Structures are given as C-alpha cells and as structure tokens.
Amino acid sequence: MQLRRFTQCDVFSPLPGRGNALAVVLDGDGLSDQTMQRFAAWTNLAETTFLLPPLDASADYRLRIFSPAREVRFAGHPTLGSCAAWLHGGGRPGQCGIVRQECAIGIVEIDIGNPEQAAFTAPPTRIRPMSKESFAAITSTLEISPERILHSAELDNGPVFQVMQLDSAEAVLALDPSRVRWPEFRSLGFIGAHPAGAECDYEVRMLAPSSGMSEDPITGSLNSALAHWLQAGGRLPRAVTVAQGTCIDRIGRVAIRPLDGGNVSIGGQTHILIEGTVLL
Image (cartoon, rainbow, N blue to C red; front, side):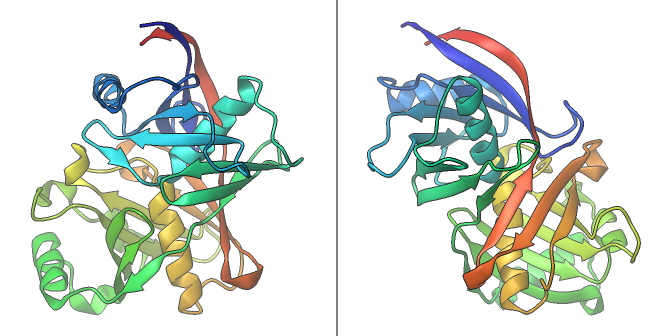
C-alpha cells in the first residue's frame, strides 16, 4: 500500500455540492482490479475513477471507471471530473486546449478552451428500437399514458439505456422512481421539454435501480446518448441546456451543442471539493 493523490469533485452543476460527486485517484498505476473495485465500493459514490499512464500514444492519460458494483466502459461525469482533477493535479495536455482521455470505449476528446465549462465530444451511440415487451413493461410500471410518449428507443454508448421522450418536462418530473425495481429494470432515461422561456430547455431523469440508487443525480453518458438520438431524429437544431436531478435536490445543468459531422458536445462545470491523499 502507498499514499496516492486523491480528489473528490462535484460535476455538472454551477453550485458546488449540488451536482454529481466523483472520487478520483490520480496515481492509479499498479493497483489491481480487485483493489479498484473494493475502493469504489467503499467510497459508495456513483463512480470512482483511477488515472493511469496511457496505452495509446495519442492519449494524455488512461481512465478506468468503477461503480460500487462493477467497472464501467464510459461515463460522462467521470470524464469531465477526472479531466478537471488531472489538470488540477498538474496534468498538461499534448495539444493546447484539448485533453485526450483513453478509456474502455476508446479516445474521448475534452475541450478545455472554456475554463469555466469543459466539454467532451460525445462518443458514438447505437440507436435501436425499443422492444415491445420493454415498452409495455415501462409504461405499465410507471403508469405512463402512451399518448404522452413522443419517441422511444434503446441507446448504447457503452452503457445501455431504455429511453423515452415525453410530451413535457412536467410529465418527466411526475414519474415515481419507487415503482422501478432491479433486475426487471436497469437504466431508464426520460426527457421532456420545458415551456418556451424557461431557464432550461429540457428535463432529464435516469431511473437506475441496478446502480443501487433509485435515481442518478446527473448522467453525462445518458445525456450524450440522448443528444445523438435527438440529433439523428432532427430534433437538435441548436445548443440546449438540460436540467437533471431536480427531484432529488440537485441542480444539474448539462450543455449540449451540435457539432459538424453529426457529432455533439456535452459540457458542464466541475468543482474540486476535497484534495489530499489516500492509502491504497
């Protein structure tokens, strides 16, 4: 065991402590998979990350992401939070303004040109029709009237989400996550538009019983997948701001911006709240 640099940060909120918490071990080299998983279970946060030397020469660092139960191939708030922790700890990107993070899904580029709000290029998302069985189970369990559902799909960008676009943010906020149980349901995503003139354009919720929580505070990977889905359907003509975590007293804010070539960027603020060392 040795002392390793450690930070805990808050991601996707303008207010420290009102976003999604992330634990980051900056010196993860030499740790076993078992040690990483046990530490992630001990922190009991949605995710804990470990920074390692890159295997790909084009990357600035390599990232491994663990929930309390398992390793995750990609996640959004760990991407922005780990990048902020790496920079705070003295990391310097090979290319000015761009950090290249290597993770299980490949290289993710993070634009750090705006010091107030970093943004990553959302990884590709596979879009599939939601099965009739899943659609029926979700609508029945959550008592969603089919006429309130504008679109539905299964989205895969590492994690797999069953998603629905409802006819309003109000309908999204009214969902009761206590009705959702694992293992019948894993990761359910919902999005609905706020009225014109509201602070945010959309409200998003992720009901995630498989993670040990009834609801995820702010989910970068889900917002990434939703952004690609909206764009593919011609429903993302401009940059939008998404609110998430409202029902669990969080002030999550995710900036989604369409890019050239069919890409989208996912941005948000990160605050470093704890800095020190951990014995691992």
